[in-house]
Structures are given as C-alpha cells and as structure tokens.
Image 1 (cartoon, protein in one colour):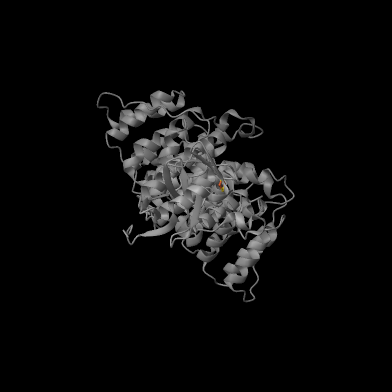
Image 2 (cartoon, rainbow, N blue to C red):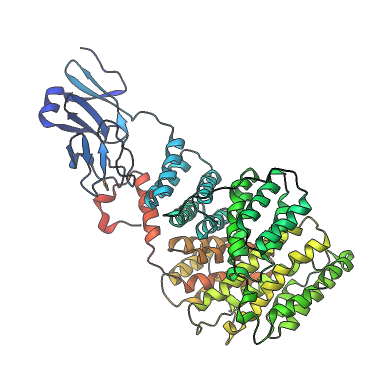
Length: 593
Ligand code: FES
C-alpha cells in the first residue's frame, strides 16, 4: 500500500469521513479538523484563531465555517476569515492515498514576521485591540525588533490622522521608557501604546502631505518663514517650509531650535500640549531613526499653527500681567548669556533654583532664573530646575484639591519636561546666544505656569521621610501594587517610594514597579506622560538625592488615578494566553489574568 509520507498523519477512511462530514485528530502541533465539503477534503487547525474555541463545534454552510463562540466566519478552502477581529485559520495539506485520508503533521510554513506585521496593520486599521496584542506578541516571537514594531505603528499613526495627537504621544512615551521596564512588561507597553494610536486614528481622515518648495532657500530664511507661518496660523505655509528644510538636510538641532522658537512665540500653548507633542515627535524620530523625520515631524505642524497661547487668557494677564513680566525679563537674556559664557559648566544650583521657582512672587521667580543664567547656568540647567519645581508641585499636591486639579499640576510638569528635552536638543551642542535666548523662553513660561499652580499646594502635602526599617524591594513592590489596587492611597504610595530610596535600594527597581503599576491600568495619555516625564527627569539628575521628589510625584499621581477597570490589560492578557496556546473558552469564568 502506498504511504502519504513521513510528515503526514493518517486520519481514517475517506468513506467514513464523508459519512461523518468531519473528523478531528491530534497532531504534535495541535488538533486538526478535517472536513469533507462537496468533493473537497480540507484540513484546518481546530482552534479558532480568535479565542481558541474548537472549530469542530461550529457549523459549515455554503463553504463558510462559523465558530460557535463569537461567530467568526471563515472560508473553509483558504482559512481566510471574513471577520478581521478573528484571524485566518492555518490550513494543513491533505492527501488521499488508496482510499485513506492523510493530513500534514504541521501547518504550511509561512513568513511569521510578515504575517504578524500585516495583522498589526489590520489591528490598527480596524482598532481591534486583541488583534494588536496578538500581532505584537507574534511579531516579537518571530524576531521583529520592538523598535521596528514601534516604527510601523508610528508611521501608521502619522499618516492615518491629520495631525499628531494623544495616541502618538502615548506610544512614544511608552517606547521611550521601554528600557527601564521589566522585560515582561515591554509587551504591555507596546500593546497599550499601539492600541492608543488605533483609538486615535479611528474614523479620522488620512493625512494629506504637502510638497517641499521648488527652490533652494537659505536656512536662515526658512527659519524666519517657519516662525512667521506658525504665528499667522498658515498651516500649509509652515508645513512646506519645514519639508523644504528637511529635504535640504536641516540638522536635528536646527529643527529643534526653529520649531521650539515657533511654539514658544505663544505662551504655554494649548495648556502645554503643543510643546509636549513637539517634544514627543522629536523623541519618536530618535527612537525609529531620522530617515523617518519627513514622515513624522510635519504631522506636528497643524498642532503648532492651531494652538492657542495663554497670553490670550485672563489668568495670565490678571491680576498680574505675567506676559508683560516675562517679556521684560527676557529682553536682556541674550546679553546675559553672552556675558556668562566663560562661567559655563560650573553652575550646580539646580535644586536651589527649583525651590525658588515655587515662590509666591512671579517677579522674584523670574529674577531667580535670570540670576542663574548670569551665574553660568545654561538654558538646559534652568529648564531642569523648572521641571523639578513642577514635579514638586505634584509631590506636594494637597489631596483636598478637586481631583481634576491633578491635571493642572500634571500639564505644567509635562510641559516643563518637554521644554527641558527640546532645549537640550536645540542648545545642547552649543548654540548661538540669540537662538539660546529664544529657546530659554520655554523654561521661563514653564516657571510662570508653576507659579500659577501655587494654589495646588495649599495646604502642601508633606514629603514623607520613608521607613528606614529593612524592607526588601520585593516587599515594597507588593505594597505599592496593593496600594494601587485601592483608591485614595496617595500618601501610602509616597511613603513606599520614600522607603525604597531611604533603604538604599536601586531606584531603577522602583521605576520598573511604577511602570508595571501603570501598565495594569487603563492609563490615559496623561498617566503615561506623567510617568515618562518622571522617569526622564529623575534620570537627568543621575542619582542625586535631590531628585527623590520627582519619583514621589510620579508615584503619587499614579496612585491618585488607580485603580481603573483594567479592561485593556485584560485584553492584553487574553492575547498573551492565546498566543501561548491556552484555551480561554475552557475556564473563562476563572481565568487568572
Ligand atoms: S469566534 Fe471563535 S473563539 Fe471567538
């Protein structure tokens, strides 16, 4: 008798199969459903690709197999699904030899990386978070580097939405903190970030690109034009100017200086979001490579041209005209920077200046910034101090405030963090004093936002000293996660992080705990921004104990917004379980997510 081959497994007699309609056999790579449909004999994995339900418990009509759990439908001849929230069912080769049916021991080989990258695109296009979760896991298992997955999602988000938004910001912030997360949490970070992009793009018109200008224009002229177009809200003018600079080979430093100057021509534009989005767009390009700058950076232009400055708002004009004060203070900054050049590199008063920024008199605050510049502080030094002050507002945030006020403090911290990042980019490698004087405005505006938030610290919450008794990092981790399982645990969260630091444990361990706690929640983009800003600012202090309040602030904000229903985390864990081959349908009521 002829054999079907060693990599085929015998199913049974063809006549029996036709009588019964279908059979199921076990193979080393999972159960297989063999179907007699008309004249055809077909074999598919018996596991519904949606959530693992056995497909032999479904039904077939007119060549369409319907799974009987959530009713995903499949073409039995190709395995392709009609419902994109499911997935295609892998087919098996079938042979009929001497009246016997044989089926391949393994599914037909496929390019796993290409398959899961295509599925990631499906998940993004149709905003299906389970598909996104499975695609991320599948791509990682197929060896696709995480930053390649981030790149695909960023490019999708930048082209399937008119402008940079919260989704791209969330993904960038999470990708930025990937290295400080536990290895197990990196999948969750990618999942949450990409799902946020899908949410943001759903129902949005795609982006329509503009072309660069058709002639050579000097960089000085392009810088001047870009600033002008942003100021007069001419979106395509600004976009074409920026594209021309990109095509002409503008450096990242030049791009940062010009865009930062344009966005700070308005005060604290869009409550700080415009500058923060700009910073994230640069961070995104850093993460995925500057060859993608032309696809990513122009998407932030509509944000800049549409943003409303706080100089148009009463709170920045009355009872104290903060804009007039700032304009006066900034008038002599270029001269000051020029005179203090020889002192550069020796200034170390970041913490002192940070606390001075918390003062009650805006003129005194602005003078403290000017004094620091005069003593040799760089614009980035000043921005770091302002970011510390903004973090201190959160660290001292009184819990008797309205809950929504957390976001006022958060917006300022997020802005200050972004200002620090952009100023570093624009001036870190040395910059003309006139340019640096324009860039440092972001820090001055941030300091005024910190001043306006002063009521959030009345009365101020005390910074905890920490419990010096020996608690292991594991015990403190458990305590922190338990605290985030309950409401109103802001003070406890602060005590735990203070105890971790007081005990001399590695800050990196606690940063990973914060990341883990965040990724369990249905974290909106503010929660994600807050942690990313906290991590970035804390790391900028390179272990200086003065930076401890930054981690305390991050922990307090996180605890104040926890717990959430954690629905997205459940989807992420279902995807993880399915990709490990688990059968969710067997114990859905008591699954240990
Ligand atoms: S449709 Fe098959 S498991 Fe959901």
